[in-house]
Every structure is written in structure tokens, then in C-alpha cells.
Image 1 (cartoon, rainbow over the protein chains, first blue to last red):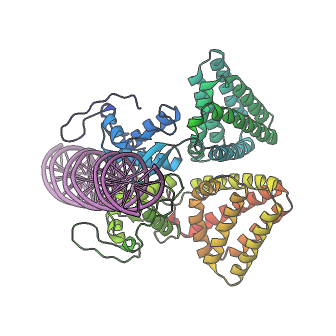
Image 2: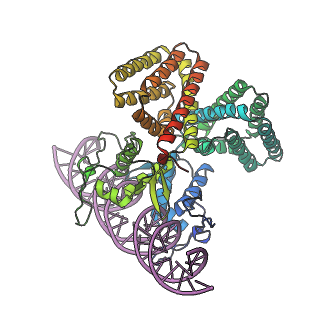
Image 3: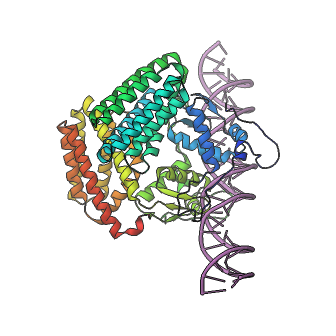
Amino acid sequence: MLRLPERQTKRTGVEPGVLGALDVQLGSSGKSFREQKVVAVTRKDQVYSILRQAIISSQLAPGEAIRKELVALQLGVSRTPVSDAIARLADEGLVEIYPQTGTFVARLRLDKIETAQFVRVALETAAIRRAAERSSAAVVAQLQNNLKNQRKAADIQDFERFYALDEELHDMICDAAGLVGLREIAAKERSQIDRVRRLLLHYETRMIETLKEHEAIVAAIADSSVERAAVTMEDHISKMGKMLLQLQAKRPELFAS
Amino acid sequence: MLRLPERQTKRTGVEPGVLGALDVQLGSSGKSFREQKVVAVTRKDQVYSILRQAIISSQLAPGEAIRKELVALQLGVSRTPVSDAIARLADEGLVEIYPQTGTFVARLRLDKIETAQFVRVALETAAIRRAAERSSAAVVAQLQNNLKNQRKAADIQDFERFYALDEELHDMICDAAGLVGLREIAAKERSQIDRVRRLLLHYETRMIETLKEHEAIVAAIADSSVERAAVTMEDHISKMGKMLLQLQAKRPELFAS
DNA sequence: CAATAACATCTAACATGTTACATATTAACT
DNA sequence: AGTTAATATGTAACATGTTAGATGTTATTG
């Protein structure tokens, strides 16, 4: 269940739920809307973000039903933006829509997670390759700084902070390639993995091992040995695969078929 | 404009347009819907396919406005499935939605095309790597057979056939990696490039050059020299980049900003 | 009692009315 | 005339009523 202020009045029109307060705000500047690349924060975008966050953080558990109408009521919007948001999540593979039956948070599927991991490695390995070609000094410094913060977070057992830095590290690698939109593409394909990683962090302290693997990857980049970076990343995957099997043994209900 | 039978009656309810005839058909078997992976062919899916095809084939030109209501009328459906389909296309980067203003077929953007090309190469290079590890003989035979057909198509100047085989080649490389859903992901990220390639094929006979590049790539795979395959693919990109600049000079209106 | 058919229920898909907002156009004003 | 304000217009976003189909349950039949 989404833990959000439930307020349902019976009057016509939708009463402001959580979205009512932080209502739509658009960037206001001199230029026209179409010229500047202002990101329109529509209701459906907000609903999408809320649901996505809830799914990735396992607040909404794999296999759990999502009641569109209930969500709409809780968030104080109509069914339309909720449906739109869910359609996007389905596209991303985070929910499964069975027509005329129901919508469910997607269960974990080892084969799909394997594919997602493969895609992530492929993209980030290629990104590293490119980043090394153009500028390395500044990038390496950034990466190492991120690692420093990861160590701090690991020391004080700050899971959330560590997780955020983890994501940032991958984003930085993508950005360093200097390709417009690459980070967004990579982030989208990473959705499945993000969900799993959160679960793993929750179940056992994989933080320290993860940190070591990250350090090895960054070290390889610092040495400009692209191939070693790729291999190290590959190693990272197989570790992840073993963890996954453990998770499946412990929590089979999270997995499909 | 979409060239489709226009039929608009004024009665209540939506009169069957093109979609009316080939109406929704679901796979009927013993098992329940949720158990088997039946792909639900909804109206929005059909509208999506039609519009996507129209955009990629440049039947709908870059920059052209898409009138949702008109499309709905032409296809004999309501605005809802059209909106849903367009939202998906926007997600894919094929259309641009300006809230409260209009929806337009996305103009070509060199930087985004570059990113798309990068992603494609990254994924397919990685796929080749994996495919070579597990099974090569059968795969190489398949690829070479495809090339044989490409040569035939090139001989008789059959653009459409050549184009289809080109796509098939890339799909085959993805499938050979044995990763569930990889082909679909790669295909989606390839949308932008598919559009450009069609335009290039139309403007000058790049077919023969493309064929040679494909042959070089497949030859490298056949030799199991993964690195050479990657380099050859990289070469393929830079060629494509030059062609793009020529296209931009000839048809600037297709490009953004 | 098992198999099957009728039925009830629930949900996504679809249709359509309404609203808010981006933009163009015109009017007013300096 | 150039600039700003008022207005008109058109579209996506949103709200909500309706429909069709998937599934579970109960009744019916052999």
C-alpha cells in the first residue's frame, strides 16, 4: 500500500490529494514554451515518479496488485493520469497489465534481470571507452571523489546514501561519454536492477563488497585499461547473479514462474 | 497526412474505420490469459504500430503536426487510444508533445541520432561477443544466408526488401546472444536510426556501400575476431555520420534547431 | 460427484465531455 | 509606430461515464 494521506470527499471533481499541494509548476521565463526545453511537470509525470519510487523501493512489493482507482483517490487525481503513468511503467517492465483483469507490480524474473544487467554493462562499458578517449583527468577525479563519499557512507552504514552515490557513479560514467540523452536511456534500462539492488542491500550488507567492486572498476578506468574495466564489470555481474539466487531461495514469492 | 480511408459519420459512438475490420483478436487456448504470455492486441497497440510505421517511413514527415482528433477519426477510434499511442511514441523520441500546444513528428537531431547510433553499436557489439562465446557455426550460417539475400535484393534494386533484411540482420545478432527481450530493447533504441536510414536509402543508393560494410562485419564475426567486428561497426557509424551531414545540407527542414 | 454452463463481479480499455494553458491576434495606449 | 494588454483560438491534459472481457462462483446436468 502507498502510505499517503487519504482524503476522499464526495463532491464533484477531484479533491486535492498529495498532488494538490505541490501542484503543477512550470518554468516561467521570457522565451516560449516550445523554444526552451522546459520539462512539463504534468500530473501523469508526478504520478509516474511516485509509483516508480514506490516500486523500486519495494514499498509496493513484486506481485502486489495496483488498484488504479484507489491510487487515483489517494493522490487526489482522476484515473486518467494514473493510467498513463502505469502504461509507462509497463513499458519499462516494472508493472504488468493484464487487460480486463488487473495491474500488478512485476515479479522479478531472472532472465529479464540478466538481460537488463547485460544492457547496463554494454552501455556503460562503451561509455567508459568513449569517455577515456576525450577527457580522462577530470572524469577520474569525479569518479574517485564519488568513491570517497561511498566509503564514508559505508563506514556509517548509511544505506540510502550509499545507494544514491552508487546511482550517481553510473550516471557520471554515462555523462562523461558526452552523448545527449545517454544517461536517461541507461537509467531507464537499469530500473529492474535498481529494484533488485535495493532488495539485496536490505537483506545483507553487500555494501562493502559492492564498494570494492566499484573501486576496482574506477581503478581500471584511472589506468585507462578499458578492457580490464569491462572484465571487472563482468565480474560484478556474476557476483550479482549469485546474490540473486540466494534472494530467490529466501523470498521465492518475489519471483515469477 | 495519413493516407487512410476517411469515413466520418455523425452518429453517437465511433464508426469503424480501418481498425473496425481487423478488430481485436486475442489468442484463444485452454490456459488462462495471465498464465500464457498472450500479447493483447489492443486498439492503442494497433494505432501505435500504424503511426510508428508512418513516421519511420516518412509518410509523416519530421516537423509535421499530428492532429490527434483527426487521426482518431481516420482510424475510427476515440481520442484515448490515439493519445496513449502518441505518448508511447513520445517516450521513444519519435514525436514531441508540447502541452496545450500540439504534437509534432520529431525533427531529426544530429546529437540524438549520434547517441542512438552509439547505443545500437554498444548493444550489438556486446551481443556479438556473447553470441561468439556460446554458438558460432549456426549463427554465422544464418548471418551469411541473410547477406546472400541482401546481395540479391541489391542486385534487383529492391529497397524495401533490402531494408527489411538489414533489420533482420541486426535482430539476428541480438537473438544469437540468447538474452530474453534484448532484441526488443535494441529495436526500440534503433527507431531514430531506422528513420534516417530509410531517408538515406531514398536519396541515394547507399545500398551497395551498406552491403559491403555488413559483409565486413559478418566476416569479422565469422573469423571470431570480436574486436575487428567492433571496429568495423564503428567505421559503419562514421560513414553514416557523413551521410547525415549531406542529408542535412539537402533537406534542412527535416532537422531541428 | 465431476464436468460444464450460467452468472456475478471486477478491471482495463475505450469514449467523450471539460478544463487549463500556450500561442496568435487584435486592441489599446504611449 | 512600437509596445503592452485584452481577447480569441486551439490543443493536450484531465475527469468521468460506458463497454467488453477475464476470472471466480454458483447452479445445473450427466
